Length: 393
Image (tube, rainbow, N blue to C red; front, side):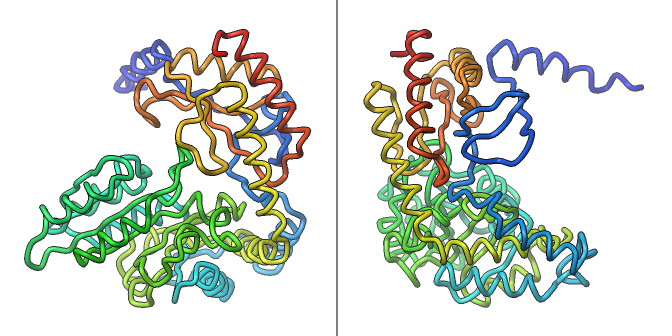
């Protein structure tokens, strides 16, 4: 065996020394408000399963029935032999859900972002991006070879200045932002950004991964939340968070969708989603429509838990959504905090550099519609006990 990769052992040891090495836990059973990880039953505050749909019986049945009827996989990419009628049905349903003309399913939210940005822009163009945008937007921008300009978090005036500075004849400009920022839980100033994009004739794109199913009427997302229908060119999202399954999507005008069917590399070169996944996603949209109380319960739980954390004097940053960080700052202390919480029955992982900036380490909590008041009050008791033991309170 070659020793060419031996250097990685030293790199991993250095990550461990700095408190940056990740040790993923193993889920042993279905996800839920309470779940079993690494042999321990815990209150699960680590999942993106906002509406509790990942193990909803209607989704489970839809997935099982589709697998039995249509098989385990499609056997091809969408553009060759892998487009099924259910893929098209899901895309029609998602377009309606997002109040858009058309939609296209990708294999993940990450590939939706990266593949779309790379397909729309080239080396003569410019991308103006919020400094806290998701890694998939950053990777797509790099793949496009366009000039990349980053504006300070949520500062629309700075985005305006960058668009003015980089304008040129025939040069396409893209202004892009997360709708809800995944590490801090704050919401983009989308109305101000839309006005800036319109002023400069720029393409406006929002990544609604953590807003779809969470914000807006019926969970329609950030565009609906701010009543900006028809003013955002591209809505990006995921099917693996509030929808509870797997995959991503792009929603927008039909000519955007047709272009991505021809030039979106992840769409072109990856096998299409299997029948069980697609059927479960369709069922999820049905449940969201039929059980609006899930969204109401998500926000009731969010308010209860945030109030409890604030009452303990913990720093939750700028969070406005069910994503609520508890910011502790130093990486190693945060890793210890997360481990002690887990040992006491609450699972919320440590988030450290490079996912967040150095000195901004935190444990990230996400409540769901399936948490009970007892779950959340018990979790708050654990936060108080462990926080006092570690001198954080």
